[in-house]
Length: 453
Image (cartoon, rainbow, N blue to C red; front, side, top):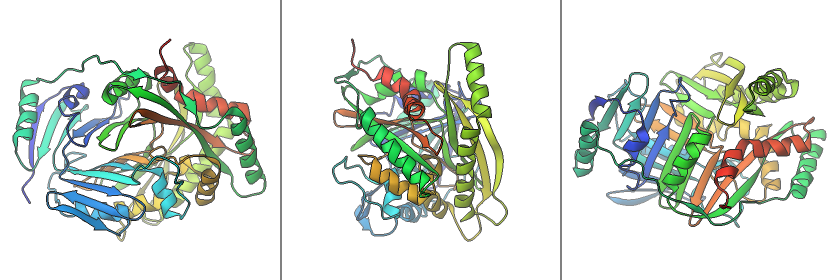
């Protein structure tokens, strides 16, 4: 195994310009913090041309590399860990030193729990990760850019030249077209019927909360990278991602962290509680105050905090799981959210792969109790969730990890775009309020992905 190289370059703030150089390369990936809007977020990461590709379906996981394709019957996340062991790293001052970047679909969680994955839907792999032996990491706090790589070839030589000379293909204004109206997979009457069914489950004691969603779709033509860039100004978020795989393009604008791990502490930041952002300053203040003092929203948030404390506790040292922040208000482009932060220390007899498996999918997008909530979601939502409510992010060769919850996420397959909106339904939820919240969350997408008038 070749030794890792690390080269530092001058700071280049708009990493989209750097990514434009590689966006059409094989399995190109871009993890964006939108630091200009979220000052606490620090790193952007980009790469392409993975040395290995891990793709998982229901019955098998395949690993493709220069030697061919190998099939595994092992657990998909375990396969990622098996492959990653081949790539030691001695770099410790970067969040990502090469490693796995990709996604876990929500349906992988259904697979784990023996819940039916609907056959009449998109044939999306349950999991796909590229193993990248090089990456560009932009540090917005230290104001520098770093290239890590193992093997120097013409591709890496070109990246080095671009970083040295600051010569990038600027984002060109390209048109994309939406060729049909956005359509939901359920009508308002169907939503009402399913809402009432959820209420009956809650009243009978089956569950306390169900995160219920609807899926929207529209036909399109054009470049998904340009779609991503058009959406970003109105929908920027700290855990954004663009992934260009041959079978799917993913544009994620997630405000929510599923799991991060710095080699010592693991953290999750569930969101429960939403109000729209208003252009009127006084109305905005009232909405924030309403959210921060809402008994209903705080109760929902606390329910999920308890669920996630239990999930982390399965793989963390006894007594190490703590609630660092409870009921913080975080504001994004179009909504205010109630966010809590839970931390713990992974036990010596566990590891990041086992922790991911035991926490997946995130409890904030299922409801409680988790498995029963997932069963009810499968019963009532007409289509698979696919990437939506799964996770996107990285696991570094060095062990550090950051994964989002794939909400506010658009996927492109063939000539169609798909995106989802949902929310948590509890005993005292009101149908019109919950239905409106669905649309509040995805309003920027509905506004941008509509047919021209």
